[in-house]
Image (cartoon, rainbow, N blue to C red):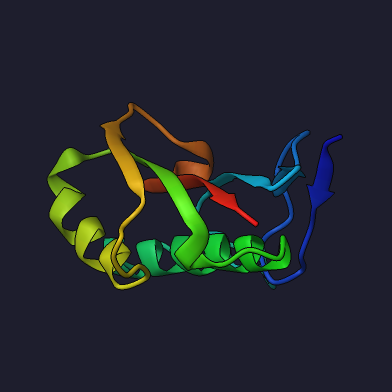
Length: 125
């Protein structure tokens, strides 16, 4: 049975989807962009600030599910500019310890709300 995960510590969904879904001992977190959880406004001063906001949103949802960043098994990173990869990767790495999650990073033509980076994940409980 799917259980919806919701927290006010991360932005409300901007469409018909859940922040995350748990089923059994697995949690799937929807893609997070750099929306401020309080104001709902995009944080886009630079790619580092945007990435930190994305990672804080992801962490809030993962923790609301009863899991933790250490239990994330897989992430997906979507970038609108692969030239930002090293800067995003540096910030991303600050939120994990070994063993790091499996991951792919892909460049896309556009993301919701003009975001430059979006990250989703799958974790265990």
